[in-house]
Amino acid sequence: MNAEHGREWVLVTESSLEPAALTAWVTRPDCGAVVTFCGTARNSSGVGHVIESLEYETSVDLAQDRIARVIARARSRWPDLGAVAIHHRVGVVRLEEPAVVIAVASPHRGTAYDASRFCIDAVKSCVPMWKRETWAGGSAWSEDAQDLLDVSEL
Image (cartoon, rainbow, N blue to C red; front, side):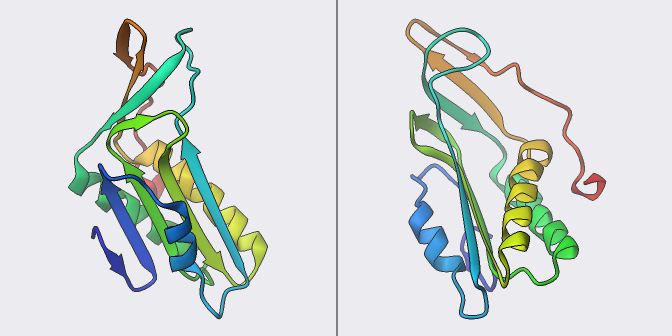
């Protein structure tokens, strides 16, 4: 499921993410609202170091399956959703680069905003993704880990 498919586009990749491409892809004539969320690498964390880059690891197949389940759950909550695209980076992500992009289209803005927020929160809580923070002189896996939820629990 690493390619465009109907009204859903799920991708976990080492390549740079292209928010504008996702926004363009979800835009449809029957949808008057498009919300695109970009989660970018920032230079601060809870460990007190100035972060220089992040590195994400996962099982690509498992992550893509979980993301597809997130989209299915969003569609069950908001049946009028148009297209939904969720892409997540793996590998090294430099500061200000997108680590995750979510684009959602729907006929009305309320649904687009709500579904976008649901999708990013669900990806963070349901998709197994490990993050290493790198700073001058060191690195460590993030301690912000939490128990993964099943998408059905949302």
